[in-house]
Image (cartoon, rainbow, N blue to C red):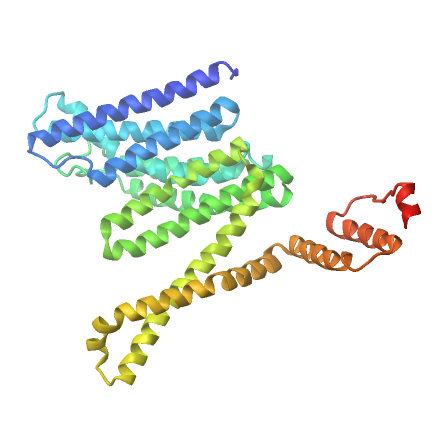
Length: 411
């Protein structure tokens, strides 16, 4: 595809996705106004669909415009289109069920599409993104069977789910108009799910294999994707824990975190601030560990102060909590504030020595040379030391130091 046609097509897909999404929102509001049926989207689901369509579509258009041959950009544009069409079809089915106007056959087809199209959001990005990242091509021709198996697994699972007879899960008042009553269909669905899931695992392995053979730039791109995946998984876990107590907050956090996949992918493929990833990972490890330790220390300190207070004053622990909580909170806050910088330095040193050993050794070598530089006056000794430090830290193929004659005479 030419460089002129690709941007036009990519941004046209974005516009089409937005138009379909706006149509779905309008139909959802019309169905809501009738009061005869449940709207297709609640506030959280509507925000999720809106963010999904915009994020995937825009990131995909940016990638496709700059790298038309990269299949990942077109996959992202397709995901945005599928999500917006799901919104339109589901909202239309709800509107028609609530007494709106339109052909009943069209409402059945719309409900049928909305009931299974979500599977494409699940399997296509998670499988083909890992397999094709970052240049949109397979790691080597040997991985073609994996690509074919992934496609076959997705098609089999989607087909089995879409052709399942009986009432539709999202629309129980509508019987699947394209259902096929066959025992083979269940086997095809299960086989497709197993094959698609196995393809996900193998695709993740392909990314590891690609990283081992990658050059410097491609390695940094893979680091961005791996970091984004780690952030998404960690946020989903935290959101799941929060959802136990505050359901809407936890679900919203999970929904927002899932959008990190296209964002980090776009940053990696566009190579925006590519080499900042090492600093980002380092700071995340340091401040993530520091936050966890300070939070644990804060809770432990409060409990310790309350226990000590209940023991000293011989007051039941439950009765003392309300009286001493303010004092315990202040004491715990002061203790954590005092520990912040020392603990941060210890964690930084530990992480640098374990995960960034070469930079850690280089910094220690420079610190040692700086302390020696303050006391040494012999230029020959300094010359040898400086050449040794540069060789050890920078590892050049050749290094030499030239001093002007006047400096040598001054010595």
